[in-house]
Length: 100
Image (cartoon, rainbow, N blue to C red; front, side):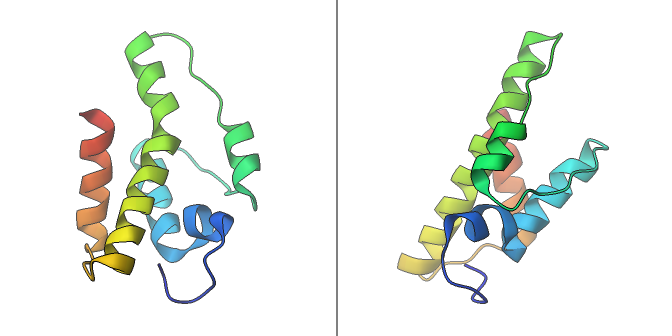
């Protein structure tokens, strides 16, 4: 997707510039500092649920799934349909998908 490295799941969903930019933007919006693990399995293992408001907790649990889904959809659009969203469009797509 970033055209800089082979398509490995860890790179595609965590470390490519598109995934990194999406993650950095989301975490900065909620005031959270986050160090991205090397492997996807470690990322998912470290994603903890929130306690309290059940709606907020449900959205929190959906964040990684939704982000990965949006990255995967963008990857397919770029690979198979020769379409590419800007980073701003991709961030809006993620936030709309998450909250709708």
